[in-house]
Amino acid sequence: QVQLVESGGGLVQAGGPLRLSCAASGSILRINVWAWYRQTPGKQRELVASIGNSGGTNYVDFAKGQFTISRDNAKNTVYLQMNSLKPEDTAVYYCNARINWPTLINYWGQGTQVTVSS
Image 1: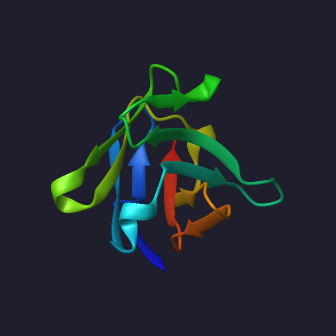
Image 2: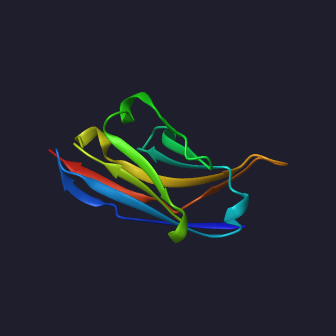
């Protein structure tokens, strides 16, 4: 089992930054990919960015140049640095940890609300 706890969400003015944290515990050595997703009411949860064990990162188009995903292995924590926030970035942000083998397993945090005011 893997437990994920997000923090760092809140209310921020448009143009401002915010850093989300995801503290992991449990069987984290089995995790292959860490990611951040977000979800707004009435819409499907969508990928924002991911980082693999090798450190390679992947960003969806809207996140490129604005968001940065990183890991601190010593602290078992994954971060999402968000800059130049826009009202449309308002969402609940979820941390995800994925095991690829032998069985695909996804773990989710409880989510943290990010609200960007105009």
